[in-house]
Image (tube, rainbow, N blue to C red; front, top):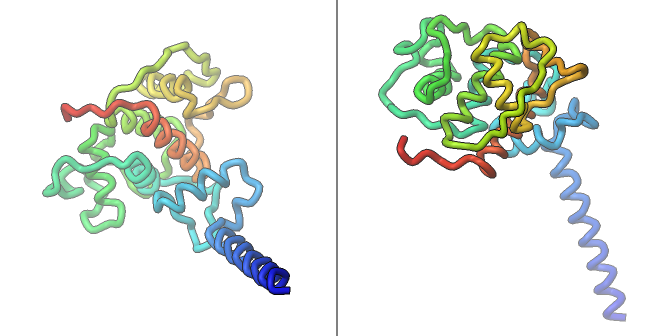
Length: 217
């Protein structure tokens, strides 16, 4: 009788625990990401504090990314660190206010070699080509890594600059970026929040698993 009673108590306790775990998980899931192929990666980034939703439960996966959001994604996701703590955003940029929420990210990005123009507008949308190029530069700032350079035929590659094409070739060869139908990349399209987050997730994973830190910097 005692064994049966204890078994029932254990069953009830397990049921309560399972319910609480289930509720806890759903509380941190974005309601507009259910069934999305990027859901697991975006939830993982959110749990690490790398990306946030537009509200407490909405991620807005198809929304366009601004330069401010994109630079914050890259700096946080790849854990870039500033080389000088005394610099101000206005030392490098005309339109990035020193007290803006993204100022530190822009300073860090610039100090790590990302090719951000002095006149960059943080509120303008960033294209897929621009984001991919900056992401590649961030990867390279982390250290050395091998790349088997098999030239990828990008059907709309004529819309890329020479520098952007080189960066995209690296991302394709490292499997961080996958080309679309008929080898298209859509370079001039704004990068969406879900696209940017997935690239950041895969790039961060690549950093952990492949890149050898450059101790000389």
